[in-house]
Length: 144
Ligand SMILES: [Zn+2]
Ligand SMILES: [Zn+2]
Image (cartoon, rainbow, N blue to C red; front, side, top):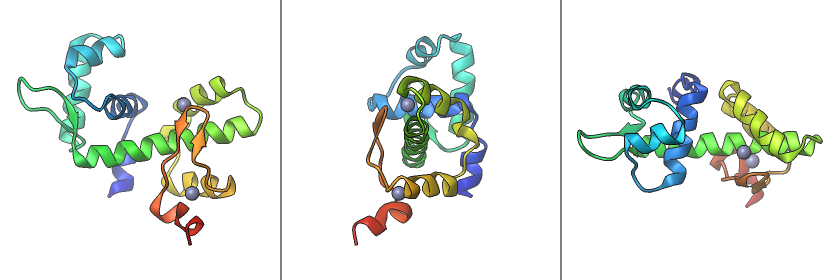
């Protein structure tokens, strides 16, 4: 179920979730539209789809925030992005390019593959563009 939800996320929806997660404070639709350089009607459509998926809370006339489920999802999305970006950079790709290219392909990569790459790199905690959160299943063996 959870894997399906991640699977249906387009690169645009992933970018919105990551933005909402990193902003911490709830944001307005106008701020989201400005951040992604789109018309407010476009961003509001994307937000509506994320609300329907249960990932975002948006009551009328209120600011937009992640739901608990959306927060957990965004944590995975950032972890996936940063694991992939680090893997590319360790293979010799320039860190800035590694970050950009991870953003372009990450939507297609399932959790098992992210965890396999994480394990192969020795469960790193820092990537080229931020902290890598631990996955309870993947990274817990390190603590034992
Ligand atoms: Zn990055
Ligand atoms: Zn790991």
